[in-house]
Image (spheres, rainbow, N blue to C red):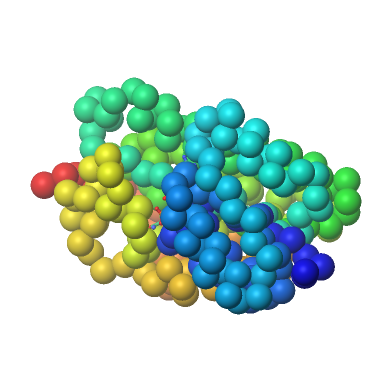
Length: 257
Ligand SMILES: NC(=O)c1ccc[n+]([C@@H]2O[C@H](COP(=O)([O-])OP(=O)(O)OC[C@H]3O[C@@H](n4cnc5c(N)ncnc54)[C@H](OP(=O)(O)O)[C@@H]3O)[C@@H](O)[C@H]2O)c1
């Protein structure tokens, strides 16, 4: 049994799995969760790295799911928390079904903020801990054809930078990982109309490298990290280019064809 514990949400695939792998290789035991049974396959792979792994299937977009997940943590001191679970939706706002929009907001915003509040308090009471939140560079861009998703990421980016300021001088660190488009299943999930958008077929970043960059930044206590020079260039441009033009560029990538 390791003497450090990491909690990773959305660890079955993509960036969350890679973050959990890095935490296991770095000597953490793991509590991981996702919405589907594939989390158990991920848990088996992570156990083969020597970590003790507890895996839970929970729908974090529901209050019951968040409560079940929190009960699994069971008050144990968390050394690293990766707030990573998230979904995109795609399609025009007016064409999206409201339950899907609400679920997206409940998962990306409500759930992330709830668990961040609980684990953040616990870490402050204990006087140590590292948090890594998966935001996105799209948090800097108005996002036609995934408007609510981009807005949820703007919320998370903003929340992270605000909390970092409140926590200045605290031993608890919070890092916002803001990837650009990364090759994960998020673009091809059922009910996600991004599959028909140009972005689904474009070259994307390697999730292994993106997670490595985020994990290293969290361990160093950096406030924000945008992996990749091309993504840092885009982020810098967002401060100079009018929102109307940024929105049109996003539309070209996200509008279903
Ligand atoms: N890929 C990109 O281009 C990109 C760029 C910037 C930021 N991000 C962010 O990176 C994070 C990880 O996404 P990813 O790209 O790695 O995609 P992914 O492979 O689809 O991973 C999403 C993870 O979240 C879990 N999840 C989804 N809905 C859930 C729910 N209701 N309850 C519990 N778990 C749930 C999924 O588990 P199930 O399969 O069991 O549902 C999966 O483990 C997200 O926050 C995403 O917004 C991604």
